[in-house]
Image (cartoon, rainbow, N blue to C red; front, top):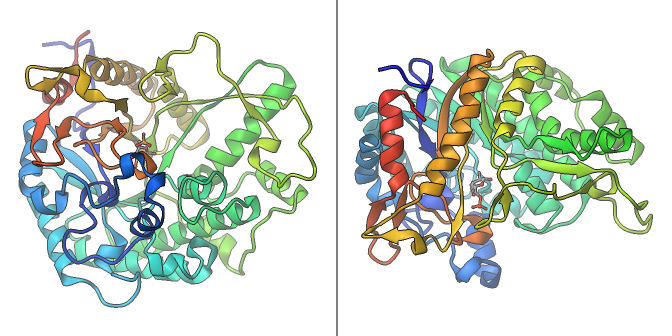
Length: 461
Ligand code: BGP
């Protein structure tokens, strides 16, 4: 049968998850991470006061969940290792219970012919390391590198796709600019230092991986195309600065091994350059990734600033640009995010033209919906809106592949509705819903649809 939209052979169909959002932080032996700590300190900041111990308990139910993945056509699945579970405290003794757990998860996945994609850090800094400054402190880079090496040695014989970080810009924004992650600091200069140290940690892990292992290693970035309001030079300049800060600050060093000159000049002009050490440049230049994961949810719409920043206010990225709401834009009204499917195409064309057509895949894309229970008919959620969302993004991805972009797969965020940072269970993204009291999972309509797409390696429209 010929399909209107068919994808390359061995295309990766699956979904993504993370340890802190799905394992259940009270299950098994685990050190505390910043989420356990922050929730205990300020439960009111979390939607419905739900914390990271209330999850779909992947730690307990992973065997059955992996069978479910198989049923809905997954040939690949991303999980993350909880650093605080593998090495409670972040340094020192390895927790053998965790080794057994991750070994078993990996083995079960492989037994079901689902390739494990393993990410090392999904916003979950061990508390002890945050207490000495987290990514502000260079000692934490070495602790992370050791952790990465331990993980590679334990699981690298079977895991052939590794990721150092998921969306490393998010802890920078959340923790050091906009107050939505612990340690809730607002300080642009520290934010830059944290971003820089994260990149050094990433590079050290890539270096060690390439020395001793034989699979692929990459990073997962949330690329948000930064569209100017108009072609006016002031709008173009604003959009470019936004792109430099939020996309290229990680993309360029990871893929090209260099920071953009314009970014360095901007930071120098405002005395924001990070402290560096001898040898950093060489490290950044040499250790490029093999594979890039792209998370795409929504673009940024940018315009020039109308007023000059108040020189007495602390410097922030928004000194250089403003956001605006494009008239007539399509919205995910349930989450309040813009839906712009072509963004996925624009990202890929940019990677093709300016980043050596790096081997990539969509590592997250998805539609969060509030009060999703209102769409239950019979006993399942009829999420036609999600099917539409995925389909429209896949069409643009298909077009990008036809245009020669090196795209290997598509992972939905996420497999089972999960706990999500401050939003807890406000927005649901999964192929499966979960009843947190009974732990019963129910496949949504999109799960059945996706199973067909994966089976046929494409779809008709
Ligand atoms: C990405 C994260 C995921 C997940 C997703 C949805 O940025 O990698 O961990 O949370 O966004 O975001 P939210 O749950 O806030 O709607």
